Amino acid sequence: MSLLTVDELTVTFGGRGRKASRAVDGVSFEVDQGQVVGLVGESGCGKSVTSLALMGLLPAKGLTIGGRAEFDGTDLFTMSPSARRDLRGSEMAMIFQDPLSSLNPVVPIGVQVTEILERHRGMKGEAARKEAAHLLDRVGIPDPTRRLKEYPHQLSGGMRQRALIAMAVACAPRLLIADEPTTALDVTIQAQILELLKELVDQEGTALLMITHDLGVVAGLCDQVNVLYAGKVVESAGRRELFAHPTHPYAHGLLGSIPRLDAPRGEPLNPIRGSINDRIAWADGCAFAPRCDRYEMGCLSGTPQLGEPRAAGHQVRCVNPVLDDAKAEEVPA
Ligand SMILES: Nc1ncnc2c1ncn2[C@@H]1O[C@H](COP(=O)(O)OP(=O)(O)O)[C@@H](O)[C@H]1O
Ligand SMILES: [Mg+2]
Image (tube, rainbow, N blue to C red; front, side, top):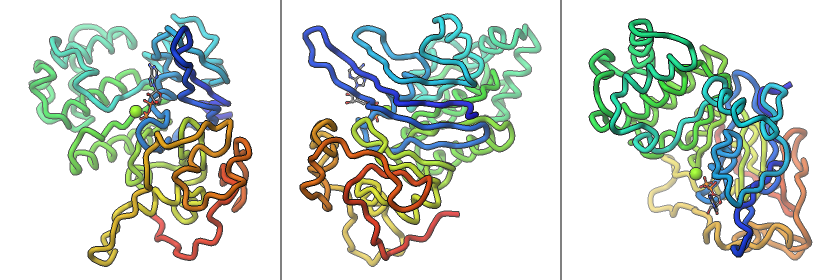
């Protein structure tokens, strides 16, 4: 059994005068211990809403959640709020894109880390302070004893994200959800943070749900990848399989739009035309149809279902998938 099983998750906002909008529309995936699973897609496709729903952090007003999510066999959505809160502090942790808004600006880093250790691991005083320094050291923050006394604004963006990771791992979570943890950081720091997350997974067997719009992150980190479009998984496969054979035209386009160093000079990048707002309702057909080069009439006869047109375990939601792709891309190791 997987550590996290998400089955047909739907999240709908609104109602009461406002038109209800479905941000997540029947998403299913699993995350095993020690596994890195990616949720990938452009801005607005439902990545953050999925993660916040799993963490129980969406504002309740106007919210409707459907489907099931089980953590270690326990149904997250029927849990009592207090049990959920306990789980959130101990077994499930999340790191966000913007470290500054997730840290308390008026409380020194050290106090914020030791609070977690006191609350969740029952540590006190000097022991908690020592462990906090150890955690900062572990995530690569130099001179941790001095840093513990500093406030979030005194740290660089990369150091703040490290501090947040230290806080997330302070309670040794079994599942870490990272929502675009490196988007706000520059490239070198990004690589270091990703390396750090990889280390945690390897050393602690932590399960990692990695949320990103960046296929480079997926290539370097994820075992299994789910590509989201307008609230639905449109393609799901192992990383190698996905990079070798992107089969949904959206995933195919995404992979084709990664700049390649060996591309001839002056060759245009190949971003997918239009935006996620150019879409039709899934009920009427494929939401990606208005942007799709492979569009045909069949794309508008109801929601395409996930199928396995290419290989077992490689799921694709498309009536006209890319099966004839001769240019096999080199696959990241
Ligand atoms: N609290 C909310 N109320 C209403 N709509 C929301 C709310 N949060 C997110 N949405 C909508 O849900 C969709 C998915 O958003 P989100 O999950 O944040 O996308 P992303 O993939 O960029 O993380 C977007 O259309 C967004 O406008
Ligand atoms: Mg987001």
